[in-house]
Image 1: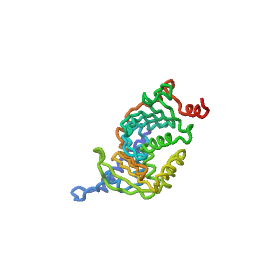
Image 2: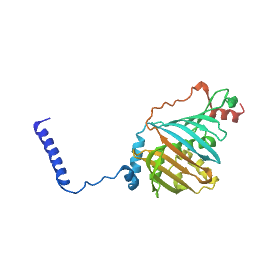
Image 3: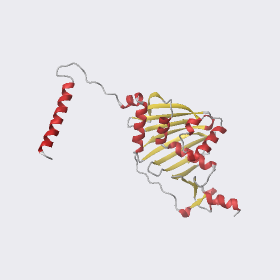
Image 4: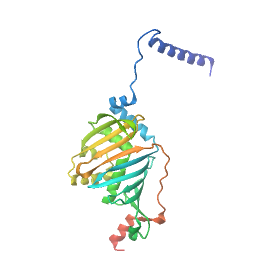
Length: 277
């Protein structure tokens, strides 16, 4: 660097430091420095800005561990697992039904792989996995519901939904699993909520909510001091409700499709039924 450039840089740095000193409290002054608001205070006072920063922070996260509990269609649901938040969304979850049976489900993009219990493998030729490609199995209710559950678990989509819906308010500071957070909430008409979800499953979701007479939904989100969601809640009236806890952001995960030789394709099975083969 030329000598004049170095001199200019040093001069600017010195003037900046001098200006900061001149504007600050003088020696012997009783004036206290202005207190900067903490993250929790900013989360509560700057709702839109804080949620936008939470989107940016969470989008940079590679993965997250989650636990979901709630009810769906009058039945209790429970899931535990991990989400890979890369370019192609992936997930591996263990789902427990009301009878206590636990099934592993993997999602890779729009394709789901469901582990079939040993006693239910007669229709899969003994294969332990069932493949459901939601883009190929149109109108499949079970697949649509499964897709909705996984979509609802994505923390980034939870934040973007709150940002897009008018009327979100701050409930206050609350502790979630030991972490200080700020709690946000909004109650919105079904039509507004539907506009925020994936168009591929909008019709099925609308029909399911209408069948239960659901007119509005309640959405809650708890954000911590690192601008990361710690908990999300969705209340759907008679249709059900769910609470999702997020932990272990950035933990290394590996989620792969089961071997093709161990997988039965639902689309092929349905095609065989329709042709009588």
